[in-house]
Image 1: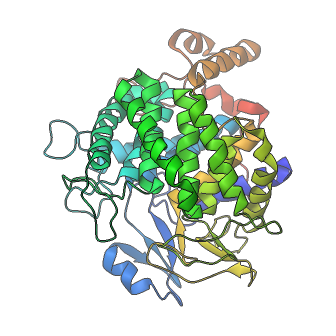
Image 2: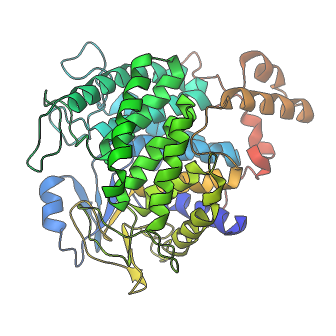
Length: 470
């Protein structure tokens, strides 16, 4: 097993990359997180990239692809909140809140009701001039809003995260069901939304299984029967077709099945998750641990480590399946070892600590070619770096990627206990108000958690609260 120290160092390098690379500018998160850093030198996909994504800032040999996507921003905010829970470093909490303030208060991405757009939906990014809504991205917005709300009730109170997540979940289920029952096909014969409002190919787990992940998490929130009904119907379809899927789609299917097993509590989904993990592991190279790059939006090859569509999601899925099937730990650890070994160690701040989009094992370096959304030259904030670091945090804290546990209550008990031990001046506030509930003072200025005293001692998990330079 990769030692905890190696995992901890890799995580700290990645958190530092988010802060130093320029992907979060300004650094307090008030204007959110850009989609990616992209290399401009020797990038055969650069012209097409700029045609599709006409917002960027140029630097020497690279650029920041500036679109502010809701899913990437939620993924990054969630990462820094999880990091805060681990270290107690208020800088991590404040950065996450800055990103959330951008999403809810500055971006205009959220379609609040009443609206001519899909209620509760998040537009794909700020560069779009009309409603562009994808099944998979919206599913992450459902899941992450609910998870952040559960772990940090003060943020739910401030931003109404549960309200908008459940509003979106209802719309997501309606759209998925409409496409799944229908027979409107795209140019490659995949089923799509007959109403033309939502984007994505529901026959592929990339869209359908991640949609089910969001619905399963929403079902846990309010036990809405139609959410569970769709998840059951969709995964019966997945079971029939999963062996014909490429490695990327199997990884997405595994993530969705693990979420369904966690939040619907059905043995059916546990068994399916085990079967999907088996199928994925069969593709794993016995020597390198790699799972081949096979996704149509990226270069393909057995020696290519695809960190945008395949290995990043396979790592998340194999981490999630361990709570049901510990027999996959050896495979998970081999893949984790590979991912840790290819983390970028360049001295340049735009690269150091990141995972780029593709690594060429045959060449022993980042490479393998580029596409306008995939390949080595694209370094994603969400999709790649944030989800990989979620897994590292899960490993360090002994937690599961998907968990219905009462995080807020546990945090409150932790704060109160520490308060009793330390006899800090504001202990009464912690006990009376609740450890994770303060939101704003009378002037409307942001306040952090009432456990501010953690900066004077240890953070959650016994980690030192101070910042660490990498």
